[in-house]
Image (cartoon, rainbow, N blue to C red; front, side, top):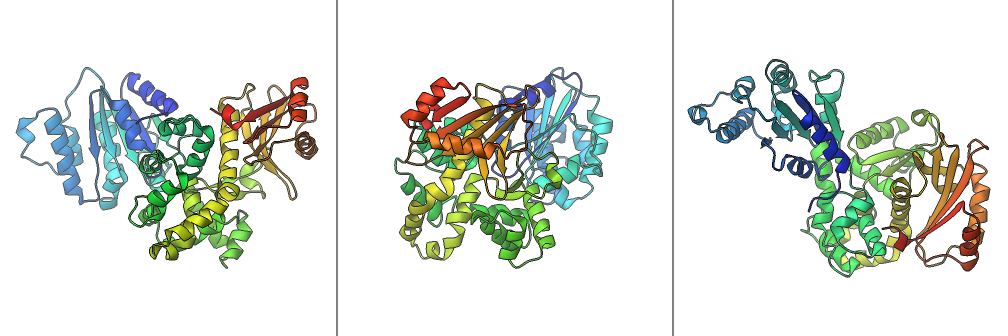
Length: 458
């Protein structure tokens, strides 16, 4: 089932309609849905899709040539292998309608021949840029793809006409795959599978008992998601034991750089290098208060695991692998039942609420994030500098209704936020279990206060 990706499809369609040749780079971490996006785009269009493999270069060239000769019915070249990328591309005839060439997992071609970017630069400059062609190079190793195709030092630099760095689906896109109207259950599912389409597909979200689904799809040896994090990291990095330790430290609540380093007894400088790599892989993100004017230089940066599934895995699978290897699934499942909502789902609920403000809130706030200082934090802070308005919000995925006292607490915390005092403030609350009558009555009278239950997030 293909859902979402409206903006990315619009970019690709615009490039397809462009007069002359187009050259698009698509990249993003594994399982994120790059191939599904491409196949959705080329559906009903003249296109040749080629998946590069971890084989010697001659095999990839042979397979690519076979694709071309078969597609264009070039009988003369079906048994004559050219063993030269440039000559193989020369086989592609002129077409009236724009023809799409997709090379997926492009990075594999460069692993056996480091000259491939230079070779493709020449192919583009001398063969393709003047043809009615749309070339798409797609890759899964984020850091490698940036170096191969997007960095200033790459031979391909400056050739692309567009690039797409594909990220996870947001909650409102992901929930379409769940096909369930129960928003509370969908939030819990999203906290486990995140917005990675492959994880959603492989997790049996149709099972009514969410904990049974966790046991069957994640905790049991041999299930697809049991070793997913290990597979993901071993494909991308060396010394993955250190990376695992860092991710476990973050999942256990250590978000400050110094705390991460001290937890692992390593120098801060070493921790920075590992964290930089994890950020380039799109696994970890560094977050600063939304009010920071220079985020890169801010000393308030905190590190979080970007993907909900990996965050779940490093909280509840990796630390208990020794039990799971002995098939003590019920023991680990009991731990998850006791901790899932408070230590995991509640944080995902904050993500979902910020996404709601981004996509569905009646007032537009171009900047949306969190805010914190040494003693307080606010779940949602939105800024609209052009209209001189701001938003402060709290999210509670608990069984208690939100009362008027929380609004007064929020207003006090908001006074500490470094925002122009002329800005008009708005307040928003998201609650799993509703609101007290006093707060509802207050919100009806004061139009700057917005209240949303879980059921309203649809």
